[in-house]
Length: 435
Image (cartoon, rainbow, N blue to C red; front, side, top):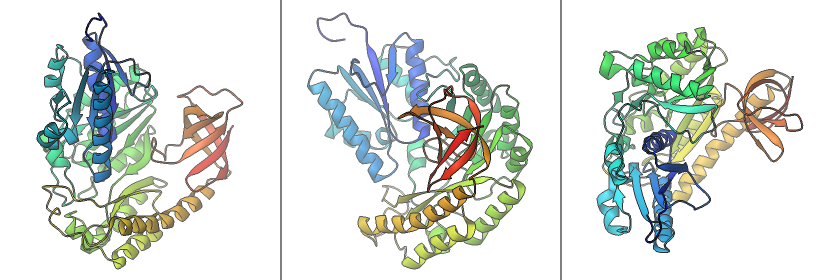
C-alpha cells in the first residue's frame, strides 16, 4: 500500500512464454481472487500497484524478453508507479540466485512450484480446495488444461526438466473435475497441455492412460472440442487415436514436436527415435484417423548440423506434407548435455536455415489451403478485429495455426460455432462465408 493512502492492493500478472505458464498465472489469479485481492492479467491501465512477472526460461530470446520485462517493471517501481515487483516462473526457478544479485529491486523471486510461498507475500492463504478455480486470461470460450507437470525425458538440448522437475500426472478425477468447472464457466474448447502429453498416467497408473482420460473428458456435456498438444513421438500410444476417431468432440488434430528428422541430429539430441520410425508413425496416425491435422516443431542450428541435415528436413516436409510447422533456432542451455558442444553456426546462419525450411512449408501450407476452397467447415468464432471475424477449424489451434477470416457485416456471437464455406486461400489463412 502506498504511503499515506488507504488504497486496496491491485495485482497485475504478466505472463511470458508458453500456455503452461498461462495456466499457472490463471491459477495464481484464482488464489488471489479467492482471498479478496483484486487481480488482472496484462493490465494496460497501470492502475495497479503490484506486479507479478511469470517468466519463461526456455530459449535465449525468451530469457531476454523475460529479463527486459522485469527491468521495465523495476523502472516503474523506481518512478513510484509500483509498490512491489515479484517474479516467478521458469527463469526465476533456474536463475534466481544470479538474478537477485543483478536486479535487487525485485521484492521476491519464486520458483515454478512455490505458489503457496508466494501467497504469503500477500498475507493470503493458499487454498488447497480451489481445484481448477482459475480466472481465465483467454476468451471465455476456450482454455488450456494442464494434465501433468514436469518431464522425465533427457533430450540433450532441453532444460525443462531442470526448471519443472520430473513428470507428475494429475489424477483422471482431478482433470475431469477441472474440465467440468471450465465448461460451467462457458468454455467450449479445451486444449490439453503438458511437457509430455503421451507420458500421462505412467507415474500413478503404471500405464499410459491418456486414452482413458480422453474417454472421461469427451463424456462431459457441453465440451465441444478437445485438442491435444505436445505429444512425444517415442513410444506413442496409438490407442489415443482410436478414441479420437470414435469421439466427435476430440479434434482431429495432433501437436507432435519432432525437433529434427536427420538420424545424426536425432541421436545427438537424444530423441530416442529414428527418421524411419517417425515416418512410419505419421503414416500409422493418418491411417487410423484419416484427415487428421498434424502439427510439429523443428529445431535448426544444433551443433554439428550440416546442410545435408537441412536438406533432409526439407525433403521430409515435402514427403510427409505436415499441416502445421513451427521452427526454433538452437540456443545453448546451461546444464544440458549439449551445452558444452561448440556452436558450428552463427545466429544469422541458423536463422537463414530456419527461413529456408519454412519456405518449403509455406508452399505446402498454401497448397493444402487451396484444397479447402469450396468446402464447408465448422469453425469457432474467436474474435472480431478490424471489422472482420477471426475463426478456426478443428484443424487449427489458438495463435499458432491458421485462421478463417469472415466478413463482419453480419453479427456473429464470439465463441459460437458456425458453418463456413471457404472462398479464398492464402499461405497460412483462409477466407470464408457463413452458410
